[in-house]
Length: 154
Image 1 (cartoon, helix red, strand yellow):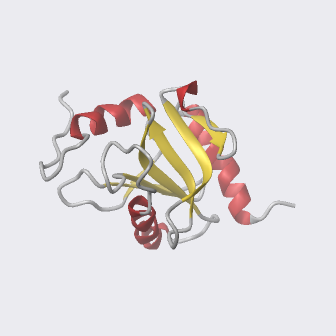
Image 2 (image 1 turned 90 degrees about the horizontal axis):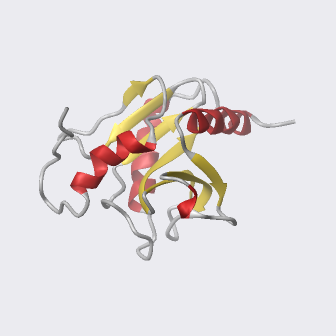
């Protein structure tokens, strides 16, 4: 019998697939499999734990997803995903550090925090964004240093 968080992960897996992500286990990673790759149970730097999903876009890390059981208050989870976004091992390529794309999800409710926003805050979303949508946001901001967020044209 699956626990409530496993049930949430099944729903999140389906949401990722519907949005065009390829889901992989950390033991078998192929970043060339698709533009967007979500890696399950990814170990972060010591003291930071494991991200339920680490999101790669075009071969570099871009964000995290934290899964919680249905009924959990997701606004409180924003702090946890922010911490995960700061725990990426230095040896891994990243578009921007800390990772700016942070999702909190129960599989039935999902919130998104975009660290590229001038004032990042958690917002309810109805689905996960497609890798190409997130790439349009993040790639122009790769290596942005102290430059402010520039939203995509159009």
